[in-house]
Image (cartoon, rainbow, N blue to C red):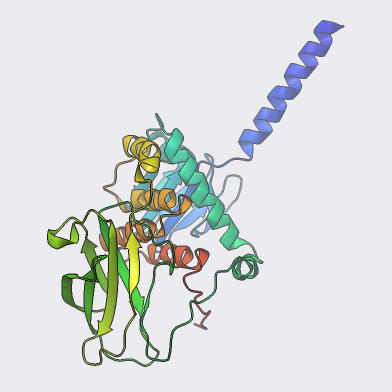
Length: 313
């Protein structure tokens, strides 16, 4: 009798594990450019590939000419598909080195969960309920730098900042100044467009206090300003060392998809300036991929910096 019960339980466990694995996925689509398709296992025809979709071993990916498809493996490792043609997902999975992927898997799951939230109908309602509302401007002629108004911590040595200007404003030349804690100007630059890259290791930007006061003004009308915005080092930056070093050991920083994984690490740890900088680097590497820009908007919305209005196409 005991033997029968043992065999029955073992059989049930095998069945349950098999079902659980069958409900999993092999890849999630992070980015999708081109008229790409997917033929799901057991179906007769292909359908359009969508960002956020999951792919299983039995599926087939059909990449168009000039395609860019960014895939995130369930292990957290990433894979780019750029060549046209039909590819079996099971074969693509064989190209991924899944060894030592425990840390990257964690942040891949974090990103996947956020993508799932965006797909849910009540996403925007919950977003507003958790405080993700547009930061009020101090008048009709103010500039909004797209970083958190408070707790704008930065771990890295570089920040890529973007800003919004008042509606209808045509000027696209700005003066960016950086001051230290003593109100001394340590950097000044004139930039064209609504973005600037700051390197906190250059010249006078290096400081022991770990605090930088940034101000953006319109060149022709310097009353149009962002006001002073502080970016600072975390109080205990070493607390991130273990996680970041482990991630670096598993994932290189030299691809746009991996930048997305790093952005997930930074966002989960509340380092939103670093997260947005990582996404900006991904965009610079592949500016034609709109999905990276959407990921940037998602981070901005999730962290209460701004809510983007829905516009009719």
